[in-house]
Image 1 (cartoon, rainbow, N blue to C red):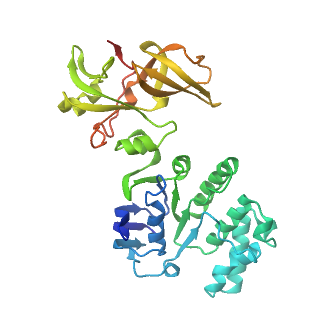
Image 2: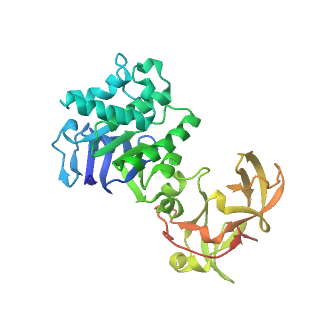
Length: 375
């Protein structure tokens, strides 16, 4: 078993707390992605697991054993770096063999593992070449092969695709998925790219300021963000936020934005009713905003065709800007007046002070609803 457990892990650099009491369970054979913006602590967390940094406090366990006092080479992990870290004077085969040779592995075992990894990664014809003779994608495969031949308990990957062009990143994401399915090895992967996180992970851990904000299956975290940071970070364009006053109206609870208002669906009322008379934030993702026959008037400010979708920037009310991701056949133009509606089943409400969700994990089944009622 190669489950990885982080228990109240802390890493301080002088006055900077890079990792702040991080606790995380990484199941055996899972693909867990640490995702967040630059400086959030995800790479430092990975380096603590690898043994490349010493924890200020807390525990790192691999396979049920605490490894804080073990050096990196004693932890049975293999790491793939952002810059590949290949020896330029060695051939592909020599790069892949090197770690095993240092461990004193039997020659027959080395040859067998290198041959198997080369076949798996389709780099058999490259074994006699040096890194300078390879493309970026080929170098990445060699770096993966060097890790695979180690047959480790845990793979640690630090933004391994960030140096590749967009098309090759897509291809390598698919190959990493297939590779994980074939190897069934616990993988911890670091990235700032939310698309990589969503497409690769069994579970994601969203980090900010050295803390884990939310952990869970990617689709659940995306649909049920625990706070405004997670809601804003995941998604492109990010979630729309509209802040207003919650009050009682003729038909129930409404959020008053000054020049327009939005009624709270029945499914959400029990979660926000205690906040009547206070400010709250309505959150809705762009794909849950539609151009409709009924709704509040909005002005189209920007139209961005993106092939499979069109992203609209809209102004509602006097100065509220929102984004909508609509079907590419929706025919609108800049300056046009349209009406917009929200999908009531996909709304979120947040505390504007703490950023915490008031409706976390709510599941509603209401139909699409106009964004607001004209005042």
